Amino acid sequence: MATETSGIDTSGGGNIGGKSFASLGLLLTKADVPLLPSVRQVEEQIPGHNGTIDLETNFGARQIELTFDFFAATEGEYQTKLAEVAGAFNPLKGQQTLVLDRSPGKQYSVKFNGNIPIEKLATIGEFTVPLKAFDPMPESVIDSLNDPDLSDGITLGMGYDVNEEPTRYSVTSSTETFSVDHNGNADVYPLIRITGTSGTEADLTIANDTTSEAMQISAALADGDVLEIDCNAKTVRSNDGNIFDKFSGVYPKLVEGANSFTVTADIPDLTIEFIFRHRYLY
Image (cartoon, rainbow, N blue to C red; front, side, top):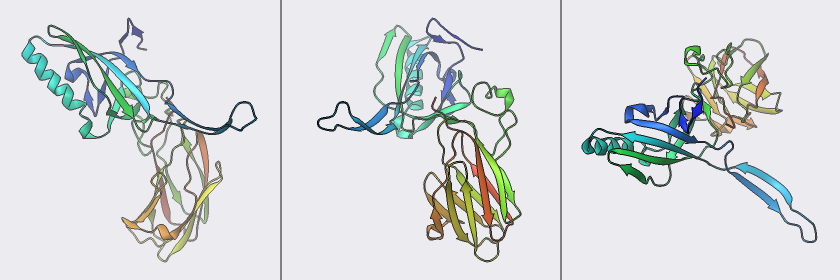
């Protein structure tokens, strides 16, 4: 296992937006990733009482700083490479994925946030890139419909299950039960995709018995139709058309570990896919 010595990240660097630090001529010497994101605490002070009342705690954005050493043979090469680095971290690209080789199974969605003063000696430079993860939780680099590739070493401490199976289930009886495993330790709201044939409009109930959250939909499915419930965006669409008026209940989330689901269908001939990336506190 790679270790850090003398402040140098010997695990090999990483990539931003799929572009490796090495290809930019950068040597990652320090990655400052806080153990937990910033915290937003809501509290109330009661006159005449000691202390405060804890009302709510939420996470804010996570600030990440990456420190690099930078080498070039000539001043011209140095300036050219700096231009490439500026392009790679350009915030106008929007949020980009950040993967560090020390934890290759996880990715952050980040955006440049601040400024980059450069300490320069001849054609050798050092600088720190400040990044902000507006969604503070890292997530798995693959989604739940793909098998983890053990050759990448992403199962080592990343929360992946060696025997992980795609989260795709068949509903062939009026009531089906199955388990959806979330290997992270931060809640995640999945995209639920349903295909099949119901012919006429039929009622469908999807319940996460582990969290006591359930949703109901009345919809007709013809061959080739796709029904998608985005539990994060809180949308319900059939073949890209909005059918939110056919929805009732609560969008179910996935908590850490096994989530026991019960699906009840009037006309069962369905395939249900839970599409998500495992989410982690760190």
